[in-house]
Image (cartoon, rainbow, N blue to C red; front, top):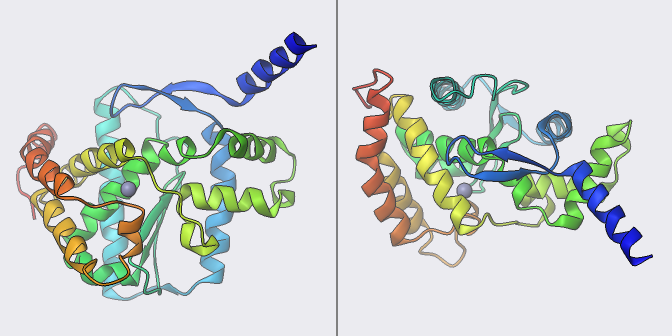
Length: 273
Ligand SMILES: [Zn+2]
């Protein structure tokens, strides 16, 4: 009986887990629920979020978010193609929206669905600052960090929802799991922090993406200095509470900036703004 149970668990696990290589680190990671199943759920959740919040369009700030997003997406594609990962972005439907909300936050859901809150704009301050945040968030999505921060139990629930015929019928709690795992944390009042190693990975990948997109990677450390200064009050900004800042992070970004510029030069990018 025990063996039978064990076999069942192994079988069930094999159904929802498979290995994938993270193109940015070369490390094997668990691709627990395939993108082909995650993306439709993420897209639906994203549209629902946009429907329930005030999306700003037509302003110069909204246009800047779109412009930076497109450049970072293009940089991702160039980097992946150059490194033998052609087709990695298949199924992505990039979208960039600015939402009126004082929260100091931004996120990217699976499949390239990005939201910036107006509250982060004064801290991002410049287009390069936006690019630093965008690069970091896109890096989390490209590396599938969201999937990896779900617990095993949550994964099974999401896998169950993914394989069910009608996505609309999935339970409220599954929606919450997907939302919190992939960025909509504040909406559900639950924040699932990324691990320190995921943060470091996203910082490093994001820095390269912003450089290939033509933005000065030196600006990333400055962004985090502003984040740190902004958190001097009683309540730290949300972006920071899920993205623990530290002098180490600023030191890392400073140390990695020349490498990011060197990477960008491989793509013919020599001027950084
Ligand atoms: Zn992060």
